Image 1: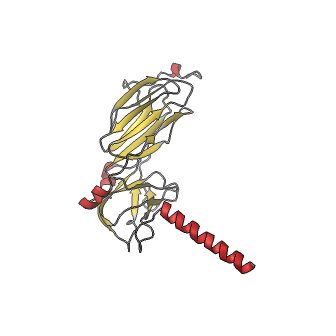
Image 2: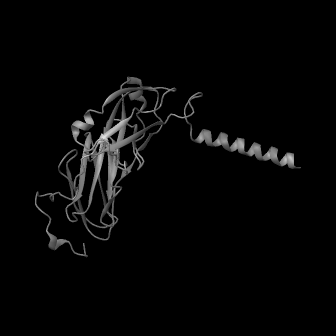
Image 3: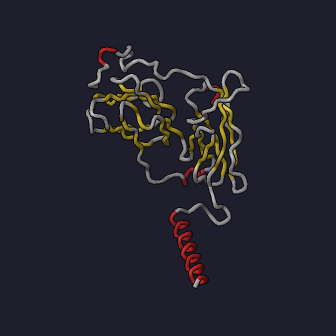
Length: 246
């Protein structure tokens, strides 16, 4: 009886594994995982010092092979950056160039979302609770997002020329899912890093079934205060307008 039970249990596990593999294919035979992994470290003025929280570093791989670029075309993904509790959620969003991002207002008061400094420039105007507006990020780069009513609200949308990107966690670990083998240009972006620092990290790499690890990435950070910004008219925020009603 025990042997029959073990046999049925093993058979059930095998069938479940086959179903799971069909639902979530990991690549061709001999290449069980197509994820590319790496690690990022952040340094400050003293190059021997590292920052404990190495999150929010974006790494993306831009295909250099024509065939790989063609395989990246797929159904457009829906992206969302909500306004909730007087904050943008998420605070950072990475999207491929050309992606549409919805900005729903989930708060019981008005918001006015705008981006006028870098990247995609837009002003969604004043819109009420429960409504949403959309922006197409059709140019590469970082767009810094603010609210014209609430100065504490700030976020960034980074549009990249690839579907293969990942964001580091606090330990600096980066994972880019489902990357086909081929030649790529690796790019790195971090909000608190100088453009020249990031440009120096660009490099060509080859991803194949035998090597799916990114080269060492070390980013020199220059901390800044994201709250130091003007409203959409280029003026300081009026403190008298910051009431509990809004």
